[in-house]
Amino acid sequence: MESRKKLDLLALASVPLIMTLGNSMLIPVLPMIEKRLQISSLQVSMIITVYSIFAIFLIPIAGYLSDRFGRKKIIIPSLLLAAVGGALTGWASWQMANPFWVILIGRAIQGIGSAGAMPVVMPCVGDMFTDEQEITKGLGLIETANTFGKVLSPILGAFLAAMIWFLPFWFIPILCLISILLVIFLVKVPKNDSSSEQKKKSITQFLKDLKKTLKENIGWLMAIFILGAIIMLVLFGVLFYLSTILEERYHIVNTKKGLVMAIPLLALSISSFVAGKKVGNNKIVMKWSAFFGFLLLTCSFIILFFNTSLFSILLTLVLGGIGIGAALPSLDALITEGIEKEERGTITSLYSSMRFVGVAAGPPLYTLLMKWSDMAVFQTSLGVSAVGAILVLKAIKPKPEGGVKLKKAEV
Image 1 (cartoon, rainbow, N blue to C red):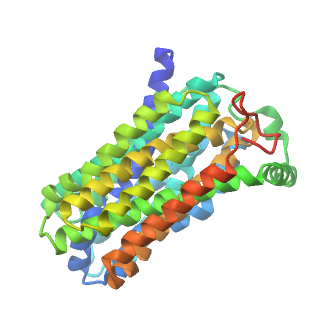
Image 2 (image 1 turned 30 degrees about the vertical axis):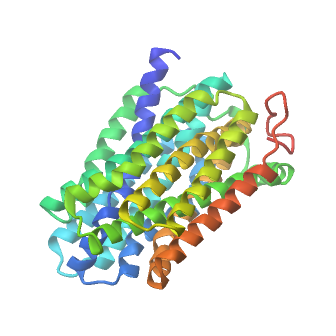
């Protein structure tokens, strides 16, 4: 890979890193926010959920706009909007006696910004390279930045909150501004990243072509959409569960809590990095990497049916993190490399939107499961992960020669 392209990728990787920090950094802090604002656990979970809900509905629009007008023209204003939302949450927490609803408004604005930033990065990587193996490596780096953000987030969030409980809110605008500068000066996407043909299309014609594309590829596309939602549902659900029990049951707080939460996320990050480098452009390898990732995630929860000590919980999450890390780069590559550039931004944005469905649903769902029992948390996690493994096995069927492009009803 050219050194020039490496700089481009590193700058692009800052976007998912920061957007991940913007959400995941708050997870270890939620119990503290709950106590400070004197709200319920379901209400505090809305701080994560409202961010994701707005992203869900606006991501497809951002994908279309990036196809039509160019990737950078969407990413930069979106990062700026995310910075504004972060500043509003920080200001409300600092200056207001009852800031909960203003915090939610700020988080909604952050979600809108996230909708136009992070999902556009994947098709941007696809535009930068013509070789599928280079695309896969690039996507592996992006997914690694995403997962590294998850590793760093509990440590950084807990460390900042230990000083001032609302400091994590203020950290996001600073990071967004850094990312804006990196994207402006380092990212050089091809001039045809938004093709002239695409720019000439009316919205009606674009929607007609998109409908045709989805109809011809509905089987494997829907499978990958659902798989993305399942992974994020389990990941954010169990992180919320771990954050809660560390504080309430084991009295592990502040930076120590962040370090403990980072253990399974580090396993996820390493696994994602290795998978991104190893799967190459072979779609059969991608399928089996995704399958064994989901299988490992499923089997990891069996441990907790026999032992529920903290060590067993962390072991389960480490194994599950390795499984998630093996699956994510393969899913990203399958959906990016199987789509023509003209519609790549829109289709991958639908995939990103479904991932946010999982992020939004995870904390409130697991809040309700935790009120029922720990075993309900483990059984639900195992069940939905098993559905994912079966879905990979049955619905994703690459051709032996390595797959085809979008116009066929196969990956």
